[in-house]
Image 1 (cartoon, helix red, strand yellow):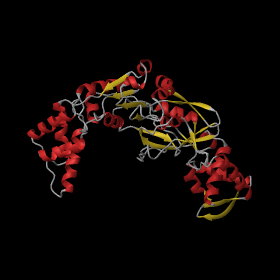
Image 2 (cartoon, rainbow, N blue to C red):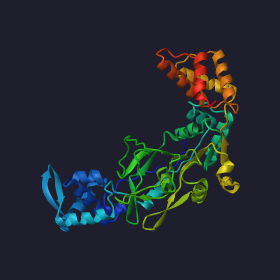
Image 3 (spheres, rainbow, N blue to C red):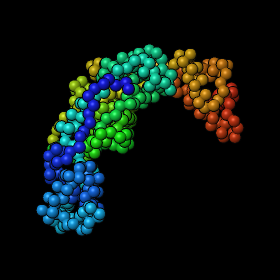
Image 4 (cartoon, rainbow, N blue to C red):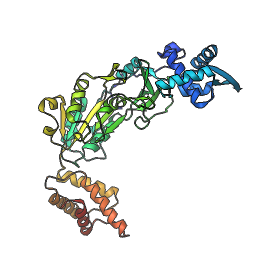
Length: 416
């Protein structure tokens, strides 16, 4: 494990309502909505749906009976099946007008903030461990040194240089340096009575390894990697509410907390670099961010993530020096040397099962340099070998690395 040892956060299960940090009215609204949508629910299903303990659900059942919000339809084994009374349905409809959220019960904002701070990333890297994380790439030693120093120092990373040199590939593999780490992410959090969804199954990779009992409102995951490119908009940096369902979702930096956020093709987003840097100048420096709800309420969350920008635009086109100075770690990813290009070419040919002689190595390198005088890009071997395989597949023959195939691939790959 490459992260330094630090206090492990492990949420313990709440057995009484006051231990959850949630109000009775919020939990009641959720139970009413679950039952309203399903028509009838057993108490066991309410436990499963809400992620609250059986003790809490049974207490809520007794409260609903007392307030005449539900009717007990039948016994299912040792369990009760309930449906809503007329009064309960009316209250459920009022709750639905506030929000359609009917997922697991949230955790309080204070608990979330505590968890993010306790699970912050602390790296203890060496050149060998970083090389191991990037072992399927060919990365120059100077980039390993600069990248390692930047990661240990902390702060945002800017990977820049001409296209095709491996900036995105390097950034996407950085989560491997904390591959063995596990963190807890809440399904949702509660802020001033509003519920914000945080857990995203497309981002948070769950780990169901057996551990001591924990609060089911939290999901055990690997540290997340969130990647955004040209589709990034300004509204993705704050909580967003669906106008129809009135369900609120967390912004991208909140979903990436305790992990890595990659902003690819920086400078080509729907938000300008100046707007983005203005928005994050304080969070990047102070490690806290201010978000707001649709109601106008603002709240603070930790900004505990590794932000990596990758761009092929000149840095002077992105922002003035004053802004760029705030991004202390700027690493240029340049074209490969002839030797490293040959290493990469041999590796790709082996993966593609295309025998490559020393003569053909030299030929491919020389012809690529003719087409790309600015240097040998890391993307050339993979792209060209795939084209050569495609040519052979179309001609219904075994692919081979011969001059005629290379020439044909170069002709369709490069702009003449």
